[in-house]
Length: 438
Image 1 (cartoon, rainbow, N blue to C red):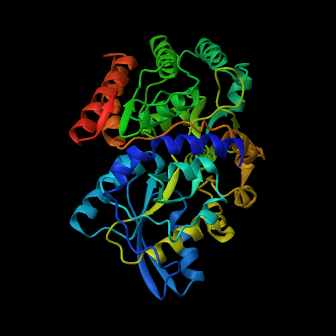
Image 2: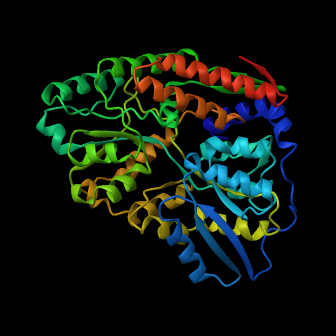
Image 3: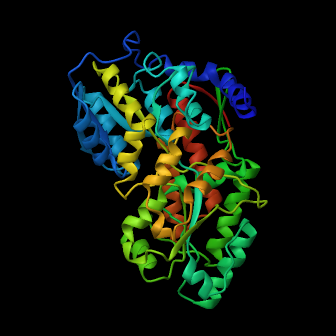
């Protein structure tokens, strides 16, 4: 047993009782069948870059299972609402993309099937432990992990050189670099605070060692004001108060425009961001580089920002086929190559054996030939294993998102926003009849 596996096993063991309360209402399905008896046609909803290319490649090479794909908005942009409504209406697809942060909520609502009979322990052993643990709730397996999404800092190396700014290794360095950028060009900023995206903030809290959700016995403990979160909140409030970062919505025309005109020099994102920038700003090829996200002590440390898994909805009668397709996407060379070779995805596979495949398939010329996957490898290994998501992420994030918007407009503080998220989370857990402390 590796040191990491030992730590995460203890964490999961400590939360099993409370999670069992949630998973008791999850779909069971038929766990006795491991492979589909084709030909079978399944439906699949998702939004990640390169997904259509993956589906096309699968359909071209398989006759026993065929996939009908529908691209939906990203989860928090309406995709999760669409999935939830379809489940309630009884017309959900067989397979859906769900980010790790939202998986417990779908499990707790009974929207998904346990796939442990199809996606076995031997299968899971080949994947990044952090991703496996995020799809294991109450001792049951609810999704096939596709990728991990360690944090990274993307920056315009030409503009950093122009302004003589050093790439920051620590958050103290980042603040100094932000001050230097603003001094060099009054309109320029080192990066952007996304008021519409609590997940980026959560990744930073995760990196700092925060634990917002923890289950002990049959009780959920909620704490969004622990010392780690308070440190991150105070830090970013200071950057906002000093006007050291822009305040544009993520992926908005304003944000993209600031990248195009060089008034935003960096992007605090995750591994998948390499493909996003490449697809969004093709004219800036060769001008960007990737660095580890700054940490508090300069040592490798990362949270996870996003991360995709594939789950089978509760009423699907084609679980074996759906899991077989999900496994093909996540654990085969052909599946990973099809996604990365599209040029729009820079996913960091949860399957360690497939990272060389992803590295080879991704054209790193945009980043001057930099081996960005080596950087992702180090970052992925440094993801804090002690973070867990709770069953009310939608409520938590919606509340924080609303308050972050007010913060950006000059209203309350980030601390107020995070506290509001805490209070709304506790209220929602209580409303659902769950025991809660916090």
